Amino acid sequence: MRGFWSVPRPSAALATSEPITPTEDAAAEAVELYTADELVTGFVPARAQRLSDILNSAVSLLVLRPKRTDLREGGAQEVDATSMALPTSEILLAMPPQWISNPQLRVHHRRSRVRILTGRYEVVGSAHHLPGTTLDPYVLRTRIRFIAVTDATLRTTRQPWIERSAPVVLVNVGPIQELEQVITVA
Image 1 (cartoon, one colour):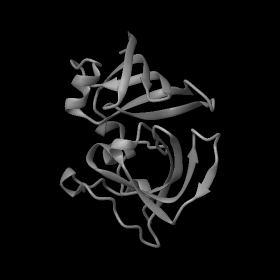
Image 2: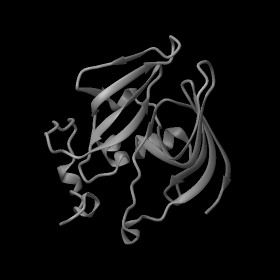
Image 3: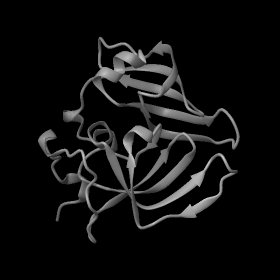
């Protein structure tokens, strides 16, 4: 029997701009999504794709069993319906589930140590970008919607104070206010 991650990835032609509908047996992965004013935690249906691929190709993301935390009102939590569709344009940051890809399928990227300000959040880590591209938010916007930052630290710049470390944080390139490249690693 095949494990979930051994299922072949679908081609780009199969990517949809609509969220998929959940099925009773659909595998789902935990995710944290940060918008301008709230934290949404829940599960996304796993479609044998990385969350970054889904966010870069979809207009909305289906979140199962969402729990919303309002960051403006001191962290009041409410449990919503069984699912919600969150427009990807509203997502500033996403913390995806662990994804280990086949090393032979990986694309060579340059890594640059960066500090990114977006909304109420500051992300420090290693941004992965294609060789020959710059880390200018305008240039990035023409190629992708979300950039991966690994070995990341996430902090809020105002109350309520949050500080988290994560292996990967996906940052929406559109609303970036400041992107400071500290050093190019490789």
